[in-house]
Length: 524
Image (cartoon, rainbow, N blue to C red):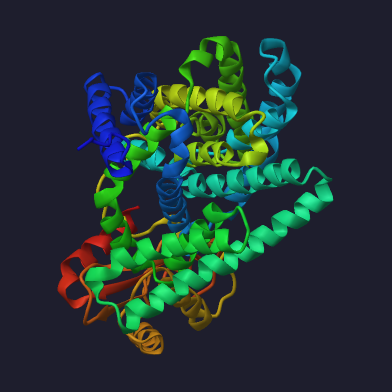
């Protein structure tokens, strides 16, 4: 009986084990595991393992698509709309500059200088590489922020924007790819992009809504994670079934729908998917490395260096421009671009999409060589660059436990106006219920707040007001903050205008911390 060395499952086991070993070796050398996975793939390619020859890798496309869909879903799941309150201006400007400035600088450098360094670089390859350059690395970035225990404007902007930047990268890539595919004009390409966004939005949202309905009516909590896996598979498959190339968009929209409809569901799903994430990523990035013909890297070294430098310059210029217009501090303006240096999963996924698209056969190798080689460099230097940026901005080791930790930026309302105390309190209660889970009916909570206020004013002087109510259920105190720079005439005992209103909801079991919070806020 002859043994078959090219069985797909045996091949995947080989790739997984080799990737795990390679990642651990690089980790021992204090280098990112993802770089070790890519290098391991390069080494495996040179061995010519039966079933893992370059021409045979296309049969593993469904696995790669699933992992890419998983990455897209998790990126979408970070885009919780209510968590982006008060960051709209900074984030909007940053996304606009990332969509325009970064690809313009990268594409311009590749189109003008690239052909002088490597005659294999076509205009089409340069344009697609410019779109890929926009993508970031949400997982790597968030991990660095957590390890640095960072807190501040730069940190909040970085964490809120990194997932959206990947969406911008996908949109620009789809536009550029559609233009190359159609071979017509930008008007037709923009129309095709709009159709793809519309169709994939409907597909992702529909899959998410059906899954959430099942989890509310039929599926037990134990199968919440598997249900989200089905959402990823269905979103990508349906997008392909409708003839679009937007599987990554459909999965992103599915993640966005889940997180904004039932945010608590996302946490449970991510916990389940995280348990298998290492297996998926080790195999995925090792496969990505196997698509890189390392023999071409030395010849393209100058082009790789140009791409790396142009991307870093594009990130710094776009971030500086956006933050300058937004009017943020110099520390954020100067270092946000450097913090955006990591390059990760979505970039690899877009490269793999090019690898699997026959229409791009003329420049697949040069895009893969330049894209993956530059990504490996970014994986080596990117995390350190982000950590350095957080340090220089003075935001590392600032995330210490605080009594007012529940006051995230999305729970702060600026620009309060009017002198109608009832209307102002109702506005803050609406914000509280939009950003926190309160078991008491909203009207009852408002009545409790007003009754407390009728007994004795909670204006404590020095421009502060602290309306609050005790609720029977819940385990942690929560609240929202309203700020008025002009001041509000709410009848404070000391006659001073109110500039800050802290609305608190305190569980019965947390009365002691309630007093500590009042003292801490009054002191602050």
